[in-house]
Length: 208
Length: 188
Image (cartoon, rainbow over all chains, first blue to last red; front, side, top):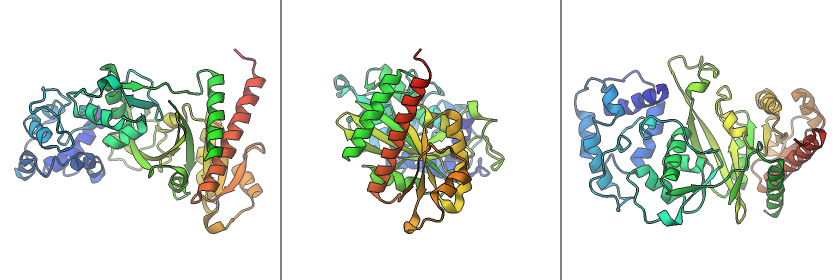
């Protein structure tokens, strides 16, 4: 919760410059990048308006649940070129914001995943789900990314969200049958499996 | 389809990202992690007293080794005082390469200590910038006070063949370690 709050402050700094003027800019610039690349900012009048309007009192709780931005959120979805299949009116969901959102707001504040998702754990889109259009934009992005198997770390990088957020999103996508989580051979389970993995890696490296 | 992970550690400027990039089939990506509540109080935030939280960035690369095996190489976060990512990094890893810059050998102490503590097999790669070796490898071993059995190799992080060879040395060593440990402790 604490980190979500501070990250949110970074985002809000752009949204509402007067309120969080003392927040170091590092997070804001870093974390805002991903959102901007989807082109939501340039063609979203709501956001522009928000930046130019006089500072409002900090909408702490409201922001967490997306109430302040859900109106503009719909426009952003429609205008995002990357997802033409998105329905015009997505169902309301706390995680449906695409504006400047605290990272863990995307996950509804949850930080736990239901699967052992290591950095290198591979995830791939289920063939049966290829045609599915999930409500949550992050799930769509995960499905696009994982058409060929991708690691948890790659998904986090592609979505430009912190690893912990990516884990929850992947876990949800797996729960709803959109993606499959591949088994990861870790050192703790079966020594034989780990040794075999090392042998395969070794011969693979020699062939490179 | 499965994956494996190797950790690449070393101080700032030791060549971690260059090392990863020289064999990776993708331009090294960066992923970020936020310090979780669990590590608050363990990690050192004294240098940034106004922050209640922080993020660290890790660079990583990917090498497809065969049709259904992908190797990921993870560089350790630059700020070594933030340890909260290191558990994620070492869990299930085959082993680690500690890239040592002989001009700043002290930067290698922390990763060496960490891997020793966690029992993760590691080797030391002395990065030879411009082909210049500033120290004899035995001096490096002595300075880092690491066991004779741990390989120390010269490598040029920019060179794919050199990186490949360093990784091979590491995996071979990790396998020897693994087998030695298994035969020392009865299965159970």
